[in-house]
Image (cartoon, rainbow, N blue to C red; front, side, top):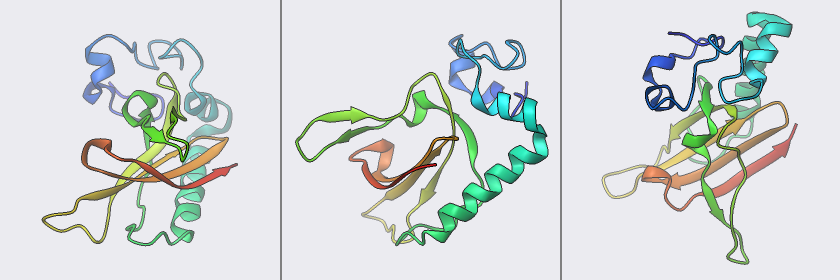
Length: 150
């Protein structure tokens, strides 16, 4: 089953454990409210959505973040999978995303990885912001590198 955004819902753990009904079955409301990606596609069409992704990819690549490989694609992702907990300078722990919302995102390997060090860059974006972070395997020790309101 493919979603409105063309995501392969059958690969998603949320569908398997019944925390998601799929956006086609719910008319774009898989998590109880309208998904911004589904709404964007319904209003502007698939072509405009692809243009939005292309513009975001260009914006990210233009940043030239040290060690980050070129971003080739952004995928619709549920916040449950990418909502990392960050430690602020005052030791407060915070999450900036919402578990039951969709984001465009990706995980990019660091150019400098070797057998001892494995670092990744995480990207999360929607219509309101772009967030890029760096973390170790399994999302451990995330650090925000870039945040921009859009």
